[in-house]
Length: 103
Image (cartoon, rainbow, N blue to C red):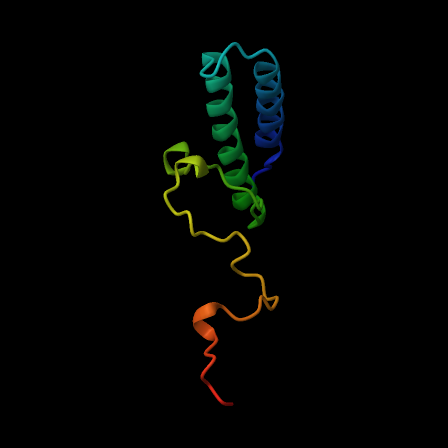
């Protein structure tokens, strides 16, 4: 069983570099921040792999690939309801209510 601690130390260092780069960012696509972001993602994956190899455990985190991210402002789905899974009663909709029903 290998020790995941060196990978953890690299992850901590990458987090610190990312914080420093983000704090001093110069513009939307600052290359220093982009590089720190990529280094952080790589360090996290290395730590997660080392942790799994050593203990069979994983972190509850994942690295998000920006190419799969969706900007909510660009969404064409105007009928989307954030509370879709809400189980509260919202009353009858017009199509659910029939005046002529004698029940």
